[in-house]
Amino acid sequence: MVESTSAIPPVDIAIIGAGPTGLFAAFYAGLRQMSVTLIDSLDMPGGQLATLYPEKYIYDAPGFPRVLAKDLAGSLIEQGLQYKPTVCLGEQVTTLDFDSATHVFNLSTSKQSHRTRSILIAAGVGAFSAKTLPLTNAGQYVGHGLYYFVSQVDTFRDKRVLIVGGGDSAVDWANTLSGVAGQVTLIHRRDQFRAHEQAVAQMGRSAVAVKVFHELKAIGGEGRIEHATIFDNRTKAEEALAVDAILVNIGFSNTLGPIKNWGLDLEGAAIKVDGMMQTSRPGIFAAGDVATYPGKLKLIATGFGEAAIAVNYAKHYLDPAANIFPGHSTNLKPPQGGAHGR
Ligand code: NAP
Image (tube, rainbow, N blue to C red; front, side):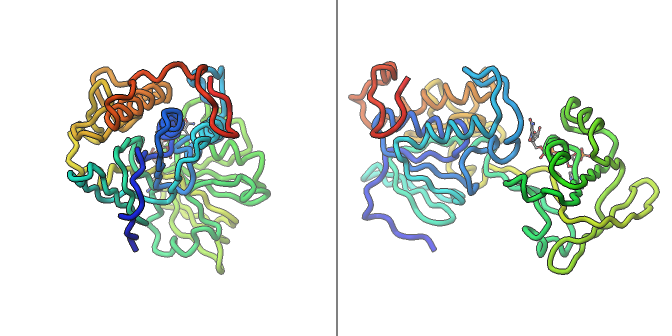
């Protein structure tokens, strides 16, 4: 049910997306004394760093010769939440209305309605969800041996694990789980992998049993996954496997979803912005992978810069007397009980 929140004063900025760009924007808005609501469709902050490749090193994050994605996400979460924004997870944005009398946006989500004076869309590739198995009984096993995400490596400790897929997710998890699970088998429907060649080579040297030209035909078990039937798609020969867990990594669907209907100028699935990260609608800004402009590069590093630009211009949009340039953070006070500004 969507709650009525008209009695609650609007926040200064609602940030859609709690990935690296959205988290840095939340920090920056706090630094600029703005009240913030941070919204994400996923159940945890950190975006792709936390959900897609937490165990991978990132080499192009400024200030870190190399950093594990989950560690970078952890630091961004600590930094982004230090001014105590309202964090709303597991909420997908739906509709947006603007009240021209009060200059307040009413932003509805799958759970509630938010009132905000400005918006920053930092939705990355959009709300994303794992592609699911096209088997009729798959739904009953989700969380009972069938997984589309790994949140705890320990879930697979000493288990017989079947991984489906040939992209980075499947191969990365095969490599990570090979030292944790009792046994790992990976099946892929062809003999070419989308995954990074170094990761594929590492898998080749590991104990992972790799079966190319193989697909999943059936899964079963009493209450939880106990067995799977795979088949060779060249010969149609079937093989029964006793398994405790199946990790399906067959890709993600991502979509801008209802944001497409908010009247913003788009270029493909990206939102067009100007040099101030403003979209075609006043008061709505975009930054990170979802934003496009001539010369755009989709990097975490550029997302950080775009977040700072967007927040400073959102501040100026809300209060034209406010400086656009915030000053250097070394001169700013740290938040109460929070980390020091740099
Ligand atoms: P992905 O790259 O889309 O790969 C999906 C894999 O599943 C492909 O190998 C595909 O086979 C296979 N597949 C798709 N539908 C299938 C079906 N119905 N039955 C059997 N197999 C099926 O997905 P992802 O691995 O999750 O990666 C998503 C994005 O995140 C990519 O851009 C990836 O590079 C990125 N990522 C990066 C890292 C990293 O940097 N370490 C880690 C994880 C993910 P085909 O190849 O035959 O199409």
